[in-house]
Length: 457
Ligand code: GLN
Image (cartoon, rainbow, N blue to C red; front, top):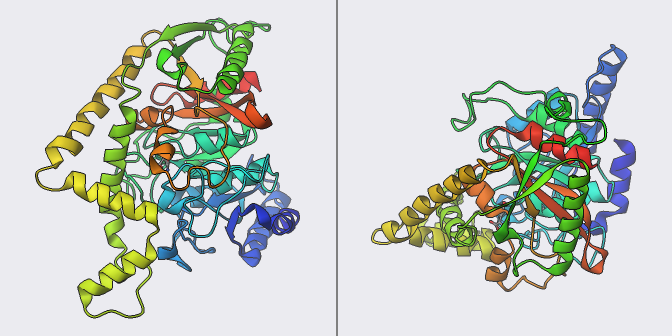
């Protein structure tokens, strides 16, 4: 912990960390030492990691990347944070992210951008950009992230690491600053599928008293589940019998040729491991962008109404009356992208527009989920690119929200369907930047996804 804290300070130019509390980190490390001295041997005992600054923590400030929550100190730990601490993990600090997790490049953070360690002139991806950057720069062996429409998978892909978004409801959302509650899901980001499995084992599990959408299924041991051999496996072909579905909508003209080449090269390695590739279709892939960018802002506009300068958050120094105080506090506290989404969300939920936008989006969301079930009748996992390009230059898309939204094309549908998805390093594309292979499984198929990723690593 001491070594990594010193390294994090040396590399503060990466913009990855937003908060430290060295005394708290070292106290946790000493507690882990004591458990080790008492003979305990569990996978995460004493392992240093850092949390996306969207998880509330008692020992560290939590900002969600927003000026609205500057200096905010939570009285409790998020369930995911608590469970990792109970497993013996040592928290190094809190990690930069897009404001309220809204973004694809970590350039919507009120505390400045985080940088991609492979090329610091580029974004690390977002919204869990700090999480991906610390793992890639070896400032921490692992980090937590959250994924509402791709925010674990896309930064993992852009920084050449491994990340998994589990089935919606598998990890508790208690203590995760809410963006879009029907989509938000926590997950681990680390160097390998094996590391992600150990972390997810500690993070997942029911938490029904605190999060009513958490799933009432017993916790699983993903490290063991991941290693369970497939029925037809042989020593030379561990993935024999596995059918990998390739949605034609993910391999079209919208994807950059360098990304497609890296993804296809990874898939041919999977064939050597015994898997068969099958062509499938996810016909409503394109609709996932308008559907997500109605539903997510709608839920965000509702969730963010709590930041009124009274119950939570920044309060303007001067105002005339209560309404003026709300207006000034929210205008000063929220950045431009968050304000844009609150306005879109309020609009699509408003009387007269609800049926045309919000209800319609919910109906198409159901059809998108059905398309996946149709696809899973032909294959065991689905594979494709995580994003249509490699990481772009910082600033390149900052003034163009639609360009950011379009880059989410391959990750949004999985989130809308609530399915587990992961990003596995596939190779390199333009500018020698990492490319991620996305693997999507059916509900609760995290062990299989991690196993398939592990076979390739
Ligand atoms: N890029 C998407 C957005 O801006 C997804 C973000 C996320 O998953 N938190 O909403």
